[in-house]
Image (cartoon, rainbow, N blue to C red; front, side, top):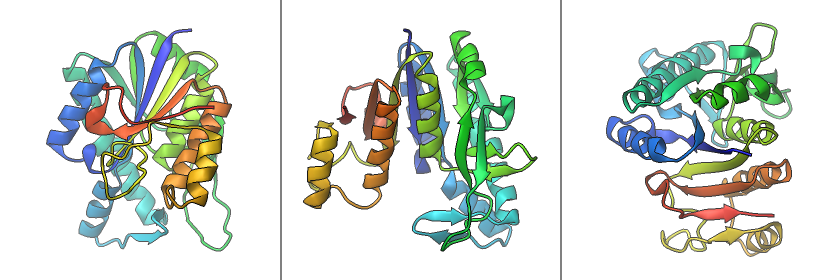
Length: 256
């Protein structure tokens, strides 16, 4: 099976010109087939503020009402996505920007209201990876924006980590997939105050131990749960690292 690297990047890395250029240069040097999944929440919040639309968050998750959905669509599928695509073309990669509605590659259901009404937020239900795999095999580099659709004409704001994980699982039947989550630390840390205390490898048993001891906590728990779900669905390797360490074989590797 051919190797495929799926990189998920978020936050200010893709929203600031200098860090974006550095990231894309590193990304362009990764050998073989590749896919980039991006966020863009800060830019969406900034534009919403300019338009007089209040951004509401619950536990770090955006409440997406009808007006906010317009903003995130403009920013994610437009500004951030096409900026990345243009920069990748400049580096000689034939990039194509997509939302889940394009080619119906990712369908979601609107998240049901329990204690919180998240609005137009999607929970992924179906990934049609064959057309994506076809594009990738033709040396197209998909750039996936964090939007899906419900097949009833509605776009849905969808967590970029989830999109990366679901795409990786679905593409694992066509490629030998490595999924890399880039964030602001060098990996999963043993001590959150020591940036060099990276845990090199985590398996399910160690994960339980680290959670019980409080070494792994907060937002890192769902990130790792998603990583194990990807491994269990056939993804060969999941790596958590820092964007400027891409291609350096560093970070935390998640294994069975």
